[in-house]
Figure: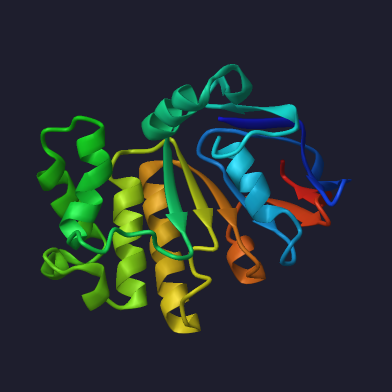
Length: 223
C-alpha cells in the first residue's frame, strides 16, 4: 500500500545544503499500522508530507496505492490523495464557519457523493457526536473537535489514513480517548495507518515502527 525507496529531502539555507531527511526505505502492506517516532526536529512531519504527496522529495521515490507520486503532477497527486487518503492533524484543521456535520460532509461533497449529509451524520454518530452535529468548532471542546476530524477523515473510506500528532494538543485523558477511537475506527475500516507521534505508548499500539533521529532512520521494527 505504501513504499518508500531511498527517500530524501534537503533544502538550501544561507548557501548551505541541509539534509532534513536521508535514505529512508520501507514497505507497508495494506491494513498495517506504522508509527513514525522521534524527537522534535527529527524529520517525522517531513516524512509524512512526502509519503502523502503533500511535498516532493529531493531524491528517492514514494509509491502510494500502486501509484508512483513522482510520476504525477501536483493536480494528479491531489486527485490521488482525495481518492485514497484521509488526514488527521494535531490542530484539527476544521473550517470554523461550518458546523460539525458540514465539516464531515466536505470531502464527501468534493468526491461528488449525493448522500454526503447522510453519511456524515452516520459518522458523527459513530464518534459519539450526533447531538453536536449543528455546532461550529468554537463551541466544541478540543476532544470533540478531534472526533469531528476523525469522522471527516474516515467518512470517504480512505485506503490510507495519515495522522500527524493526533493527540498532541489534548490533555492526557482526552488524548487516550481519542487514540482509542482512532484505533477502533482504523481496525473496523481496515485502512492502513501512518501515525506520527512523540508518544511512545501510542507508537506501541502500531504493528510497525520507524524511529528517526536527525533525519535518518535509527530503528525499524516490522517494516
